[in-house]
Length: 129
Image 1 (tube, rainbow, N blue to C red):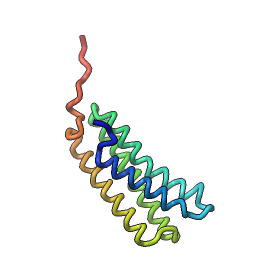
Image 2: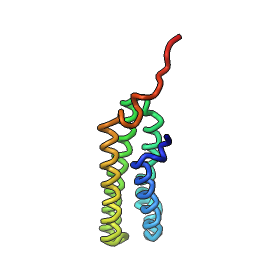
Image 3: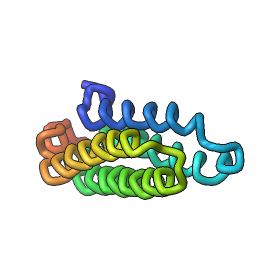
């Protein structure tokens, strides 16, 4: 199994791409601030999920990376609120993106609470000869 087949990864990737597309219409003055921040945080969610999956052999590391992903997801929600309040997102765009982000958060929370369901205790461990 690959990290790309995790539902949290798939949903967070879709969210990051949605953020990218809506942020293309943000004003030029926001290019190196809000636009950059919202893109980075949304993309970081997927990157942290991928890293977590590779560390699944070690449940505490797995959970740590997933909590990093969850934190980045929360940061994305903050930038979405700023984007909406600055008038860069319509209420409908904001609502749809927040709903996607909340779904990603629920999936991450499930993974954090159930690391054993993602192979963290099923991988072979190194044995001493």
